[in-house]
Length: 224
Image (cartoon, rainbow, N blue to C red; front, top):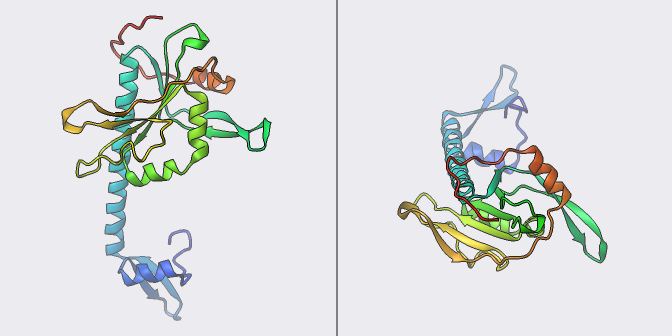
């Protein structure tokens, strides 16, 4: 409404918003029509923004929890990375398409040997709609599997305390952890298959070198 200066476009969405009382039809002195957001519409927007903030806060809290647990276990963990990953092009095995993958938590072992890093991706979901939408993105999951030896889906709980999903929703090439809620810890629903990663892709190394890992106060010692 603000971008269009309130001029109506008379589409189906506009009709529904007017009928719901979220928009009001107004006319100037010469009869030209424009629309304004009603008090009911402002209240609805406020509720939507509050719900979105709560979902984001829950997601960020779970991301930080997973990252800190990885760091305390002696691993190097990063949040919010944007990693370029090659995907083999169908019908052209020597060619690749590039995608940008953004794992919620990416971690590696503390080791000086490239073949001992055991990179792991943790993808966090606190909304069932977000989970189902994500599972339809096969290229994204393939990118994660290409840059990590194990991929985990970490599933939170909704406002009623119910898990947003389970192992039946997630493909078998990924592990599944469910937030145990008030009991604390995690419910292991399926172990993530482990694959050897002889060497991290160069693009991943460059991204890690420019990012700051999560810090834990007292990380556990991890043998090399």
